Length: 246
Image (cartoon, rainbow, N blue to C red; front, top):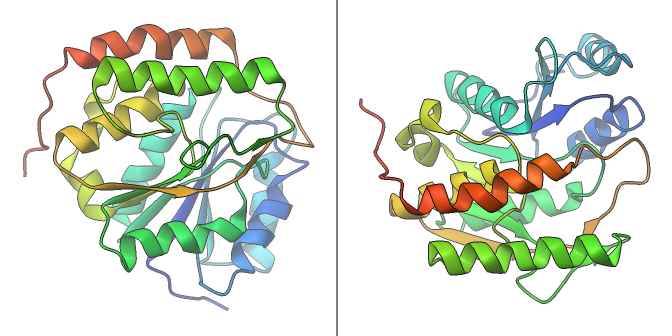
């Protein structure tokens, strides 16, 4: 049965067969109806075929799929998803991982921050109330925490979790941004999007969440992605931001 929704959860995937059906079922079982858009980068493990099966049988009109050829990067997957969501009329557009590091049960809290409290963007923040990360090696925790501190210092912003990938965007923010000008693909993409929103005058709320390291599948994190963020921040500091032309 088709269920209307003002919200869509964008989930980029590459080889997530162990997680994709479970995460879709977790999202669609919430009391608030959310739609799901999977952006799959040619997963050789059959992730896209699992999604197609769910679309055809149980979730027609509620679960959607865009298939791309090859690994094109997290940032480009989200830009693709943002454009699709705007074209299809959604008002609240979410970023979320497939591996349950972001708890589906927190989606209504991110939604409420924008829909009920009037914020333009809400971020599922690991660091707004301390360090809320489970099952990460201490080295990675420190790297992530101090990376956010570095970003705050260089860019002069107050966000505690600048690299967070659990985000709710309102339609007006994405319509205002020049999405084709977003340059980064990894961690720096998350920083660039939030910094751009702030520079354009939008309000962001950090909603405390607990981040849990994946149990199934393989992490897509790499040294190159982190390096992009480290050096990309300096470039962002010198960027002039513009609104998209109507």
